[in-house]
Image (tube, rainbow, N blue to C red; front, top):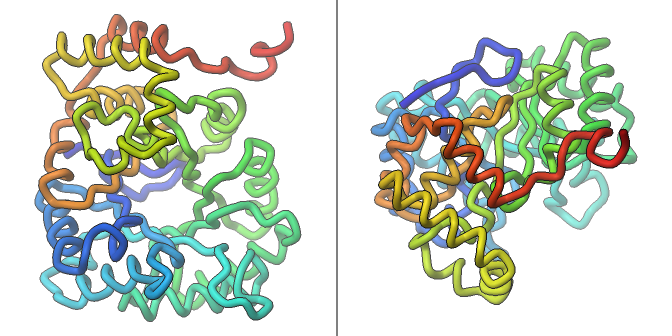
Amino acid sequence: MRYTTLGASRLEVSRLCLGTMNFGRHADTDASHSVLDAAHEMGINYIDTANRYGTADRPHASEEIIGEWFAKGGGRRERTVLATKVFEQTDPWPNNGGLSALNIRRACDASLKRLKTDRIDVYQMHHVDRLAPWDEIWEAFETLRAQGKILYAGSSNFAGWHLALAQASAQDHRWRLISEQSVYSLARRDIEREVLPAARALGIGIVPWSPLAGGLLAGRGDGVRRTDAATLAASEKHRASLEGTQRLAAELEVEPAALALAWLLAQEGVVAPIVGPRTADQLRAFAGVPDLDLDDEAQARLDALWTGPGVAPEAYAW
């Protein structure tokens, strides 16, 4: 496994991030623990979850399952860079969602309890809250850091200008964002226009979610997601690009999914794509991805197959 630092921090993370959205939904506790054990065996130390990953009858399943895994001991917690999120509504009563100071502190304590740990290494805002003043947000984060409950701050689903505002306000509170989770893949390159350039300039590492575009780029990957109506429609829309990607993957003797992930890792500012397997074997299939270095020709062919939006303002102005 290869490692890098997360944004402009000294925190070292693996070049693949284990996403745990499937825990409790498509993987039961035993299967989820097998995936977590396999991650450590592969050298993956970066594990991402959220306080609302679960099911209707068990809405916090992912955090709970990870907490049960940590409780097994054996250095599991000590070897993990743990990231979770706050924003989603956890109760219909007011102040149980969003980024108010009250909810941030309340949600953090609840996550710590479920995760059976004393700290969250990277506490992430799951979405921008347009009603919450940045001073209020950072003061809440500051209190949690003083209490030893969180170490670093991250964001998810922010626009470029949100990152700029957040980072400017953070400096007033001796804070900074070190990561941004954005949807990003060969098939979804929207963030290249403004989010990615902003993140690079501000020292924020990009952590792509849905790096295989919901299974579209998985090749012979999991059949469940690739047979839903939306994915089938996308497959037809992008047929030529998919066929070209498959030909290139065959020439390089790699799976299409590995090629798509390697392309992401080659993009400046990208730290670690989030992979969310349901089984340990699915995770192990990605073991060689961080060592797959694409040459200029391979990257140029993929760029031609999957055209990006360009960088602002040149993308739409002179």
